[in-house]
Length: 170
Figure (cartoon, rainbow, N blue to C red):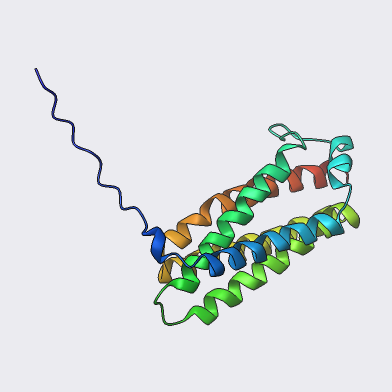
């Protein structure tokens, strides 16, 4: 008896058509935001180790790994939008740049200034900006929008952690 197994129809990108230079620049910009944030909040992993942690709080070593992955996904999403044929990329990149700036500032508020409730409010604004960016990216390139979903989920989880810590240190 012979099984007739059909290969899944997976559309693979044409590697020859990928503009490696613009992809690298896009990922570098995104990772650069993360590096700047880490530089400005040096020692935050050690500080996190000594903080109160609510249930489900991950270990400190996980944060740099998750954030690196998220910044790479953001960079790929931005690159996909840049390479798309969409008409209004200006709005998409305005939203994207604003959410990157909000992202850079949040750890300063949380770790450096220790204004936990204000940091939570800032995180809500960041969440909204990510959501708007994701929607606008999806208009131009659906996969680009989807690449921001893990980022939105992670920031939602960060909101839970931020709020729980803010309440604890009242």
